[in-house]
Length: 441
Image 1 (cartoon, rainbow, N blue to C red):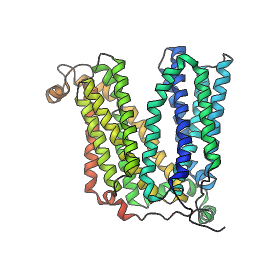
Image 2: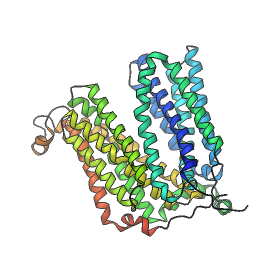
Image 3: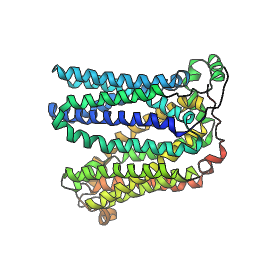
């Protein structure tokens, strides 16, 4: 087969991006509406957390082998398959609800299916980006991803909140199905190049199944700078998740004011949307590692202030500023991965990275709650062991311990970001690893 370098521009990617953005808005609207429905049916939080649990578990399992499939088979059809399964699951929910047979346990099964096929879809999309756009646009691609994520996070709940009382769950589900049709249509009309993989296929016959499944981990291990980048990501993710007490912290320090909680949460989405637009227009810094480390330091610096400050207006401002810098850090990190990992292996490498993240996140979640309830909160009550040190900063009483935990872990990430400049293996990742030259077939 003759290999040729495909002309690259943002046009094809933008067409796909528009379709996927519409689909994500529809999916988030459905998720919002189903959350309302499940709460109205049960009045309990456990079913909502179980839906999230059953959605995430298949992703952790699939990440073991998904990369091999994405690197071996047509990525366009994998993406179409993911969208199709998501659409079918929405149709099933629609039929069950229309016939008065929808039950909570149905959402667990559908969540598992959507999580599994959605992961394949996302992995195929991520691994195709380097073949769709030139390296000079990698940061813009990351910024557009931030716009898609934060924009849908702002637009979908607002639309669903307005439309749900008018059209009900059925109307929201029909909108979701329409957005899936848009996403699949945009994928059908574009050509997504496939990476050169003749050599990879020959190697896989010799290496065997185990070698293929472990390829992504070996790839990272053999490239110390990429491994350093991975360890950096895992460290900030761990402390970010371990400090996941911002919502109860805000409720505790605002007398359970849900309106304040909503405004603080919406601020980060709005900041991320504006930051993504600015990054898309700018294109990012020439040295992407600076955008990653400094951007991440600013994000967690403002989150540190979110824990320290006690005024709702300051919380909103801090969260908005944190969201504003997230696209800078996220898009620069994504650009480094896209430029340093060959497209033919990105599926396996990205899946290995996802698996490592999937192992770290539950660990952080397991300790965040117990740390808050059994250590930080008691220690910041009047007369607590940490009050003489931190009481003047965080106050005392309910919520003060969670504020200390949130600010402390966020500040640790700031130190990790700034301290990373002392390690050339990470600081010089862009110099130590050559950019790939993407070939397509």
